[in-house]
Image (cartoon, rainbow, N blue to C red; front, side):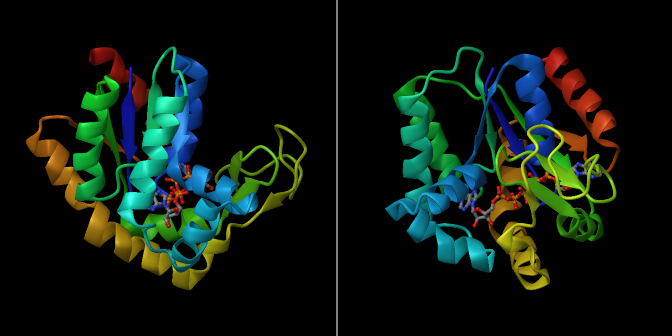
Length: 215
Ligand code: AP5
């Protein structure tokens, strides 16, 4: 089972992807995480992505598409994968169709986490991410047991660089202009499943499970 997990910045894609990995044994392919890893390792890809990410803009389509294609062709996915944060533009979605044909896979569900914009700012400004294992927490909605320390691996928690108020606003505008049109794109194809993202993390997951089990 291969899934696309869509939604605006802070909608809970990473949170729900982690649960899907645990329950269904899927592999999470987060383009944001892949870019951040490349940045930490200072690879040419990371250096290219850095300026766009810091400003809250999309990394150019050609670069992103190439990275995803390489990742899918170089890895095996016994139970399938979750695309978390890809596609994010019409061009990326079109290229995903070509990629699926070329690499011989199908997309079985497109899940869109639907949540009002005013809730996103609170979610993003309160998020804390583990430097070591990448687990995410929220200072109010999902606090770690010890402040600043990851429950899962004991690593240090930090706030991402693209979480400044200015960068968050640009990310939300970028989403509206370039990514939101994908809702219509996948609706027309009859593939879109809307899930109410404005519920507790457990309830969002229950709805996703229900949708997947009905498929
Ligand atoms: P990326 O890392 O993908 O960021 P994003 O899409 O903006 O999404 P986030 O990771 O910020 O949010 P999320 O939806 O995963 O929410 P989370 O679960 O953490 O991308 C970063 C950048 O990389 C982009 O800006 C761009 O530059 C570049 N990039 C990436 N992909 C690209 C692409 N395809 N093309 C071009 N460029 C690309 O939750 C947020 C917080 O809320 C957490 O603290 C969590 O604990 C909390 N929370 C989650 N669910 C709930 C809930 N139900 N109730 C209460 N709190 C909740």
